[in-house]
Every structure is written in C-alpha cells, then in structure tokens.
Image (cartoon, rainbow, N blue to C red; front, side, top):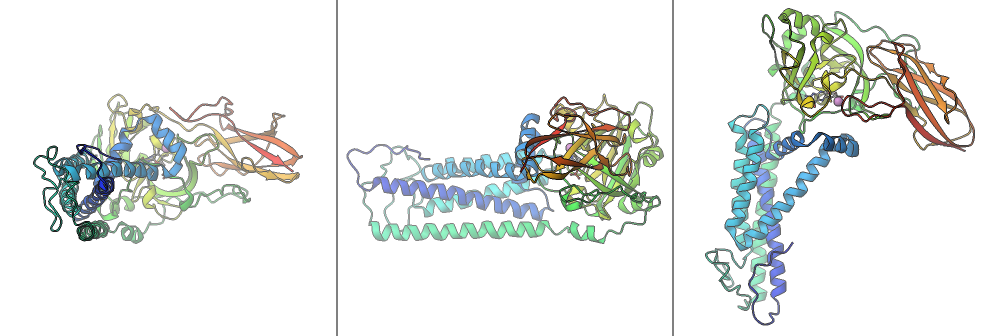
Length: 553
Ligand SMILES: Nc1nc2c(c(=O)[nH]1)N[C@H]1C(S)=C(S)[C@@H](COP(=O)(O)O)O[C@H]1N2
Ligand SMILES: [Mo]
C-alpha cells in the first residue's frame, strides 16, 4: 500500500521514488514491529495479572460470540476443528493490515499513528472488559500494549529518519517538521550525503527494530511463562478419582467389533471430537473449583471438588454427539465416564415447581439449558470428572463437565462447569438458543459408514462394509445397508451394550467391478427408522442417510 500525500514537486526528481519507497517500507515495518511490541507487552501484563486473557484472545472471543450462526456453521464446516486457528489467522491478517497502515501514517504524521495505536488498544480493552466474568483488571493488558506500541512506534519512526518525523535524524539533514507536514518541503531535493547518511540511518533503524523485536519476544515469552504459574496440568495429574459406587456394566461379549477402518467402540480421549467456543481452554485447578446450585431451589448448594468426589460416583459408557454433526461426520464419540449423579444433587437442592430449565454455566461464561424433567427422569445424567479412566482432559472440561445421555452436547454437556441454576425456559435463553438453535434437542437417530471410505478403490469380492449407528437413550434396534438403490439388507450388529451407546455394525458385501453407491439407515429402539430426507444441522440436528461411492476393480 502506498500513501501518496507528498506534494508533487516540480520537475523530475531522480532518486525520489527510491526514497519514498524506502520511507513506505520502513513505515510499514515500523507499524508491524510496534504491533509486535504491543502484543508482547499485553501478553506480559496478561500473565502478571493472573493468566487473564490477552487482547488478541479477548478480541477473538468477542468475534466468536458476535459471529452470526450461519457463518459459524460455515467456519466449522470448512475448517472443522481448526476453526479457531482459522479465526486467529484471520485476526492476525486484519491486525497486520492495520499495523502497516498505522506505520505508514506514522512516518508522515506521528500523531495519527499514535491515534491508530490508541484505537487498537481501546478495541482490545473493550473486548476484554465485555468478556463474561471480566473485571477492571482485564483492561490492563490492552493499556500496556498501547503504551508499549506507542513508544516503539515513535522510536522506530524517529530511527527511520522519516521525512516528516518531528525528530531530526542525528546525521543527515532535517527533512521536515511534524508541525506542518503538508507545507513543509519534502526536502527530496536536499540531496543528503546519501551514502554515509543513508547508511547510518539504516543502521539506526535496524538497531531500533532489533530492540523492539527483543522487547516483544521477551515480554511475550515472559507473559506466557507467568500465565502458566497456576499449573492446571499438575492439578489434573494430582487428581485421584475414587472407585465408583456404581460401576459400568462390563462390555458384553460381541459388543465391540475390531475391524480396520471401523471406529473403535471406545473413542480414545486424544481422538474424541472437540467442539466449543473457547478460544483458549479455561484452566481451572481442581482446588479452585466451586459449584453453585441455585435459582428456583429450596436450598442453595455450594460444593468444592473434594466434596464432589466424596459423593457416590457412577461410571457409565455414554455416546456424545454434536448437533453440528453433518450426515457422515465425525462429531460423535463414546467414552467411559465417571461422575456424580446429577439428579441426586438437584433433589438435595430441592427443585421448585415450574423450574423446567436447568441452566449450566462454564467458567468462561458459556451457557446451556437442559430440560429439568429429562435430568430427573432416571437416565444417567451426571457431573463427570473422568473420561476413559483419567481425569477429564483440559479440552474436555477439566475438572467437571455435565453429561445427559440422549441430548446433543449443546443442550447437555457443559464443560468447565461452575454454576447450575434452576429456572424456566421462558426466563432465560442460553448461548446457542440465542443464536436460533432449538431449545430442546434430543439426539436424532443416525448411522454412518466408516469403511470403505468415500471414493475408495477396493478389490472385487467380499468387502467388509462397516460403521456405527447411534440413537442415545432410545438405542439402536436395526441397521440396514443397500447397494445402488437395491433392496435393504440387514447388517450384523454388535451386541447392544446400552441404549446410551452407539452400536457398531458390519455387512459382508459381494462387490462386483464398477462404481457403486452404498447407503445405510438405522432404526431406533422405539421402532422409528431414520428418515431419508436430508436436513442440515441447523436448528436441531441433521437428518438423512449416509452414502458413500466406491470404485470396485
Ligand atoms: N463450556 C462449554 N461447554 C460446551 C461447549 C462450549 O462451547 N463451551 N460446547 C458444547 C457442545 S456444542 C458439544 S457438542 C460438547 C462437545 O464436547 P467435547 O468437546 O468434549 O466433545 O460440549 C458442549 N459443552
Ligand atoms: Mo455441539
């Protein structure tokens, strides 16, 4: 980008282009480096005031919350679980553009440059202050960033020996004054002693640039280190989950099928899908965790992690799925969860009549609304503390999350849970409901072909077609497959482990050469068959049969 505000000087001016180009390059670089200095200082302050979010993260979080639902859907669809990385990259590009503009302005009019930095700081502070649970301290990182950014920008602009900088370069001529840049002669004809002057100039700019980069890196690293002070990883490692009072039913003979390409019955934690709005994973040490149960209850409860673990624990195998899962998608998994029965806790608090919505809140202000009646209907709703035999991974809600079998995650599975409020559906709309998603969202019956993969090439003969089907809390009664629109064939279903878990299935297919379309559909425990009609995930979950096209050779 070029900002041509230099008054046109009469006559040809050999060399002016090069110098202007150099001014612009230095301006752009000054802007970028000053931006780095600002971010570094902000990170340092964020670390100092106790792991509070940096402006970048606050702006990113605000952007996530402000993004319209359809765009968020698109982002999730295009970037999958890398949606947050994509968002950060987008913010970085916008920020870099802004920084370059500020730098280009600053070499001409330092005050305008400083105004730009102030604007950026104000935006960061505004985002940080409006994040859920923010306090006044959260403005500090942005303020520090603005101060450091301004100082770096001024130093760089001076060192750049910019034509309109208010400080005369130590060597070489004074090129102009900030007081009246428009009328000042650009001095392009004041041919400086170009070799020595430019050389000294260049060295000075590079030296200042190096100092700024050093500050940015040191402050940024320092901030990161300080931010890790509260070592949640150590807290997690120190958690010992007591033996459950009610153990999970042992996996029945034939309930798990192992086959290459087929999802394993239990999804390992590292492979378990992750969906949330948290740009940075909330870090809550077990010792700092508190849960409040309040709202329309007879007595409020408050308990810490130790008190939670002292209650009788249950261990259950539960399949969790996301409403955003497309037909054939991977936002579903099964784990062995250990936790405290949620219904018992609510009964202890004493739910008042009319409190038909249980609102759960996470440490980062995310909210979910669950029908109270569903939590109390006898299913294994729990406050989970362990996943597949270890304390919850940080990304899956450490130290405590909610789970209600049969409901999509966005209406049941609050991670980093800190607050339960009994209220009415008419009284409060949680995060996704405010964005148009359904208030009530039981899981829809779904089936998926895992192998062969779409567009796979397989050899003719016997081919194992296999996948999973789920209809949590209703269970899967039947799965059928067909090739090329032919008759539906029953598959071999793994033994039912529980109505709350998915079932694997296998179908031996006699594959003949050519291109073939395979389709699958499931029937749930109530006898209802998954509908063929394709519906997108919005507003209450996708429908339709999964199909794959394969080539047999
Ligand atoms: N705090 C918090 N909890 C949350 C969410 C979130 O954005 N924030 N997303 C929900 C959604 S939409 C789903 S599908 C599940 C996913 O849980 P997982 O990431 O452990 O698979 O978490 C739920 N709990
Ligand atoms: Mo979800």
